[in-house]
Amino acid sequence: MESYLSENFGGEMKEEYSPSSEALQRWRKACSIVKNPRRRFRFTSNLCQRDEQAAIRRSSQEKLRIAVLVSKAALQFLQGAQPSEYTVPGEVEAAGFQICADELASIVKKHDTKKLQFHGGVAGIAKKLSTSIENGLADDHDLGKHRQEIYGINKFSGNEPQGVGVFVRKALQDMTFRILGLCAFVSLLVGIATEGWPRGADDGLRAVACILLVVFGRAIKGYGQSLRSKQTKNIDTMVTRNGYEKKISGCDLVPGDIVHLSIGDLVPADGLFVSGFSMLIDESSLTGKSELVMVNPQKPFLLSGTVLHGAKLQYGLCNKMMVTAVGMRTQLGNKLTEGGADEVPWQLKLIEVANIIGKKRLFCASVTCAVLLTGLFGHRLRSEDAFEVSELFALAVMTYI
Picture 1 (cartoon, rainbow, N blue to C red):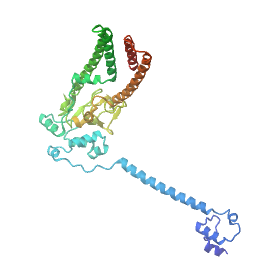
Picture 2 (cartoon, helix red, strand yellow):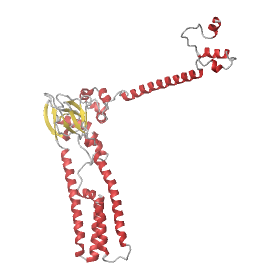
Picture 3 (cartoon, helix red, strand yellow):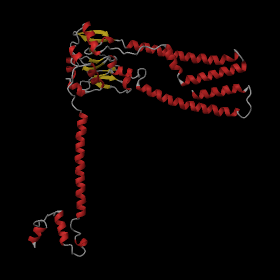
Picture 4 (cartoon, one colour):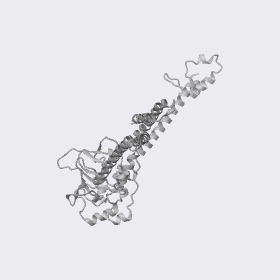
């Protein structure tokens, strides 16, 4: 009997023996004539449950395998592919440089550390720009002009100061001034109709004069700010040339210049961190975020138009950057090209919110005026009611303001 069981139902019987599903199936078939098999086999393994558990186990293993593959793919995507072989344009190579202006601009604007490492880091970029991190560029006028022909001039095209008339037109587009102008016009008509000219026009003309005074005051202020912004773009910058510190105009900066930065200085162009200690950059003028950005050798990117907010002083260590992009190729130049030169992102959001609030206030003022005028519709209007109409309209305008 033992030999028969060993041959047909899974080998020798042991104390801790767990027969396979096939052996149990053969045993169930051999004992199929047993009366009440469910009760007889209640202490044996549940084959259906065992199959379900095996299917669940296989499904879990497959899900785990897929998750591991997806994680590997995501990790490779985050790490990014290695940059392809860079080809230097012919005119750039003929000029004695090993990197073009667009390649330099993309490294800083995209904060592309992979591409920066591909070109050999800051030292490799300096070598390809034929400059020295310690001594800077050669102070040669002809060489500077040659670099400007290849990499551009540090000026922003299409950003000339606008006239006063442009700012007057912008001020008149304000909904508040339009409502006030309408109120002054109604007051002028009512005064002339009831008291005649010129006595009835006193109040209306005073209101018009006050509105024009505020409009022209705002326009003159905007024009002055536009002139000051143009002057700040031509600020002098301290650089290192021929191993000596020299102050030059911001328009004369070229890629490869080593610029010295102090606390409160405006970054004159896009560049890479060369030396310094705990440099904090305020990028709110470009991004609208008030959080300061730390610049260090691991994150060496500096953008034009930002401000050096703070830096710890260390003996023998000066805050320096190497210029990589100038003019319209900088981050500020792209912002000016997109038409966002006048307002920073947080100002644009405030203007949008102010427009929404203004529309709701105008609706409330219209409802207020309609409710106040319903009392005059019950009888025939007389000439004396003109003053009351103007007063109700003025009250509705005050509700809007």
